[in-house]
Length: 273
Length: 187
Image (cartoon, rainbow over all chains, first blue to last red):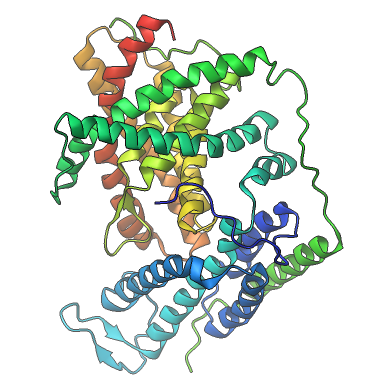
């Protein structure tokens, strides 16, 4: 298992963008698609999401496992919640029932299917917009990006520090697991969640305690170097260029248009073909 | 075992070097251990994460900011590693709020001398922080476009049960080991 973020889109159009663009675009896209129940409007947003994802240049072979998981999970989610159980569904009582789901007796109409498709497209396109955050921002840029977005300089450095701790924490986890196995530790195969949690105690507790003891050294080292004493500067200089502003502006216009459409009631109703 | 106050004597919302480092350590631990999780079928992204117990633990031991940072950044890093990006940002905020609320609850809880009672108080306090903090996922009504019943029955309650079991079992276990160590070494 890989515990360090993978930077996969090197050289692509999105990787050349200021990392703040990649953090802000998902927010704007979320504003645009939140509450949209009309499949046609959702598909129009999907065109934008596909174009954005293609600009990320993420190699398919490196993320096919992520996509397989995402698509399988989303399909199960939508089918179970919106079709089989109707827990999150829309239907018109006067509409013709196409069929009834066995066991749960949920009536399926065109509105049910249209709403389910809308949800599916929404989740998949949100993933398309979200993947570049995971794969097109260099981990070393996240701290400075958050700092330039207004987060406290100390906490922004904490984000950098978190990524630096990941490899050592992962190594420490393996060391702890090996040490406990030598002492007879076995994780077991119980499906009972309480038993599974109890069996994790011999791993979680020493790993945490060791990490905390080591952290004291880091605190002392940073204090000795005067961390937080003055305004922090960063090696990486960030500035929006014309393409960054156009990208952000484009998504902002789409988000604003979709919000207006929602208020006018143009996208809030399920589309029935 | 005579006191239950957080080890740190700094103001509740102070951002010191300790806060930053322990928050980052907590987030890294949460991110690494949080990769070991399993999904509850029929729910919207609800996973049982044993590592969730670390969130209220860091809130209690290192304060509101470190607790918030552990939950927020730890959950964000898990999402980044799994490739979700920041799609479920509101769940990360909810995780952060659990840590912050645990920090607040235990900062104002009077000292408890008896160890058994203290550990029970840790379990209850962590559970309350989890129940309140996870309420933030009500924002899924606007973010994901779900209705209140879906939020309650498919998102909130399964998450509360899954995370509740983790904090009730593992947070007192961490507390029982760390508190004497912290006192002995003056941390």
